[in-house]
Image 1 (cartoon, helix red, strand yellow):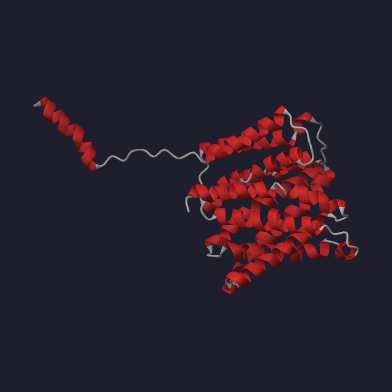
Image 2 (cartoon, rainbow, N blue to C red):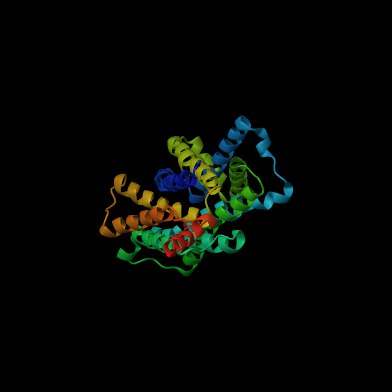
Length: 314
């Protein structure tokens, strides 16, 4: 598979993550809290990945105990911290501010990947990163309205971005240790579900289910389209894509969220939103431009001009 196809997998993962708000709105309307939705997402994904492993290859359940920190990193330090802090930020500030703080993640991934994995901070990457950040700011519409700022909300927003970024970091460590993408995804959601269990308010959630108020269609879509699918594609894409580049490519998420807001919820689209989408798409195109390679001069080619000079001289 060509590297461009791996990049396409990450783009698709970002688009699938961008649909999450659609499902969350319906589940919230049914009376579920943010933590209950997060727990459903994690436990459902864990069970589905377990089923895939049972069918595909049971040996993929195995991992070395000394490597457990990789999965604790993806499951708790990343997914659990991201979910909790992101929802807290939304409650303490506004959706637009929360989205902008979340998209500090590509910056964090790029800065961490440089010393940890020796990824180069090239001018092309830095330009694409700046364009992505600008695009996210414009798409969220924070410049056209007065943002609700709260010191604690800013802190939790930055922590959400940090948690979001850590998935790329810990997944890379797990892959470097030879673990399959399915193994990484299964243990990510296994540990995330365990960590969220005491926070989710399960008696209240089970009460909603017993009363028949649980919208099962949106629960299934949340697990398949906004969790299992994108995490599988993103982790697979990471096998042939640098962390910093992958984090920028996944920024199709806010673009998809804005598109769904316009189409499904009839939210207004202004010139800033269009410019923001153009910035993000431009950054993606820039990152995928082919690198020009300098022609390699062989000893034979070097000697040709010298021979021509000698013949002309004669």
